[in-house]
Image 1 (cartoon, rainbow, N blue to C red):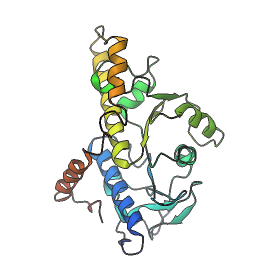
Image 2: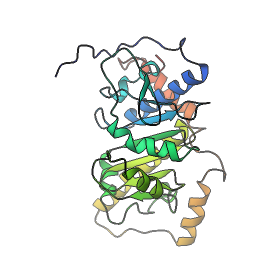
Image 3: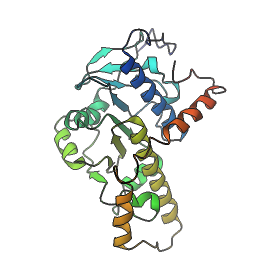
Image 4: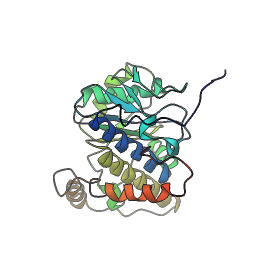
Length: 266
């Protein structure tokens, strides 16, 4: 099978979309780059989606075929809640609609969710297969005590009937471990969803390392776990991810000077 046009040199759409959509594109493209920068990618697979402000059913998603480090604001695809393409760059790359099943289900059910990130990382997959799930063994992982959902593996997520079960399992949580599969986080912005993913991934990496040590783990008391987890929830101290986001953008700007790839804001 041949594709005559697999260009990654996309014209800017900044002047052809609304100010709100362009800002959303910048936010999402930056999020893709950060997931790549922190080693949480799986070749060209997985998705990060973002709802366009002032719309109920228009989302942005990546072209299926690009590395996360290649994604720019202008290369993103606009779709509806069912994954139908509304607009995309002039390329034969499309979207992985079957892989969008998870995102579409959550966006349709959770209007408070603006951004969804799904990954297949080595540590995330490892913990997803552990019967114990995520252990409250560090301050990072304690954040998720009673605030982490689990969804049983049903095969590749292409069955629309699985949507209802997945959404029911997620409930009002913003983080989920997909058993034998990977990780998922969501939130009211890319900044908050990314921060949650970073901490969930870090928790999984620490757990894999600790269990590899072959020694008994020491866990805090239930009272300490409950109090600590509460202090990391939205509305208790600050929306985690928002303060960190400008620093993350500065990191991307510095990287763009020598990466060899178009900057995320292209």
